[in-house]
Image 1: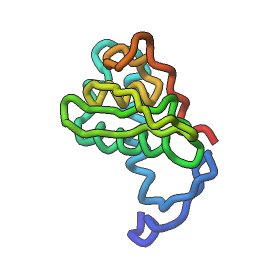
Image 2 (image 1 turned 180 degrees about the vertical axis):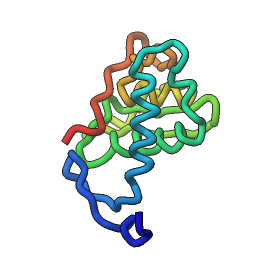
Image 3 (image 1 turned 60 degrees about the horizontal axis):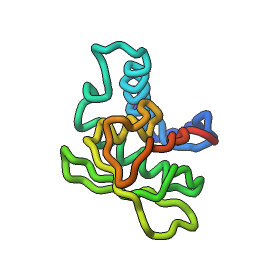
Length: 137
């Protein structure tokens, strides 16, 4: 592809527009995520590359907190393997954020609907709520 074409604006199925240069990262994400979707025990979220998992976790949290307000609950997320902290916000939240802990792959798998959060610990009993898709329009 000619170098100047990477700046060409494209429109995603959600209607969001970005530069064409974002397409390769998006396609890599599709391959890694859908590889897990195949349900093969030989490839799970823990097999995602750590640098990609960190990058995608940032995107997933950002998508949950954008103007669509998709966060399934008010929460403070703690990545036990990296020490990174994230916050899920909901409009009208009380400020009392539940603490959810686990490694980055488990946090990301839950936020992307690839896990029910069974590998995560939370501050109160019960299963975590399902996270809505950040790709909904």
